[in-house]
Length: 388
Ligand SMILES: [Zn+2]
Ligand SMILES: [Zn+2]
Image (cartoon, rainbow, N blue to C red):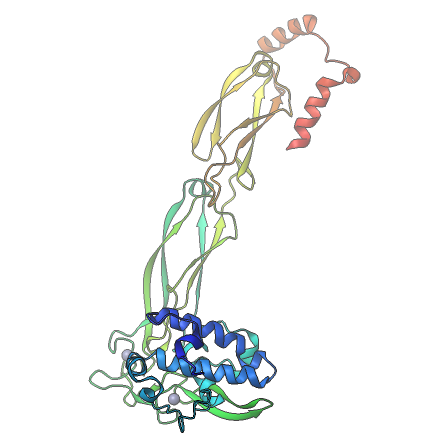
């Protein structure tokens, strides 16, 4: 029985590059030697799928294979005896290289592979640092969301050499240590055969090139001191000490390496009018004895401006009114929390002669508060107090 590379990878003959890559990755992960304790049949399969992948991922080799079969890709049947094709044409270290090349960095191969390969990213440009900024917000800004402008002093890409680090008119040259690959490889022996350790090249820090005539402005770093202004959109409903991450807005890496992130840490100013409980707010409202007794319309603040509250006749200290959806926006959920208005009946401390006279008249006709044991009324008050 002949091995067919399409069958090996389990893909259709018209499979595209992505399908092939996916199929290979899945199979290679399953039979990777590092996951199979050096099991020989897994290793054979790993070599075979790697070889199939090497041929089918390359349009030229694939075309030749489609036309001429194994002979087209220089893999004759060795005597044509009709024996099964096996992957004797690719050795384990080559197969491991294939896997590393395409999946060693971003493949998410898992801890095992990293320990095996040293985890060194290949030809990796050094990433710049993150920048942290504090962002002061008022509760009103939290309520509506806002855009803040911040000025940041840090390193910026060198305008003289466009971040390359090479003196204008010159080019970075290939690194002599690694030959431009950005990595150094060492072969090592393990239980299941040879494997390669790969680490970033110490000379070029993984970049593959070195600067022979450094830029006079940045000294070859590709970065100079600079300042920039960034607008940060703050969504409504954020909380204190939340942070917003702006990907790629941090410091550029040396010599055009990827930028770090900008991290804005939120610092929300206390608003003396409100106590914040998540998306809900509590406001303490003082009303007069007559407003409590007769009922009244009063103005209460919300983070969005004033609103009118109808205080019912007979309102007691400790009762709370809930104004639905007058609290803060729920971050990422839509809708708003509530505003709770906690009532405090204010007892006057200084009386005019007229006020005293009226109150004395009232005292002659007013009723006493209900007895404690008359239950229900005081329960309601107690519940209202306990709630907030
Ligand atoms: Zn420069
Ligand atoms: Zn190098």
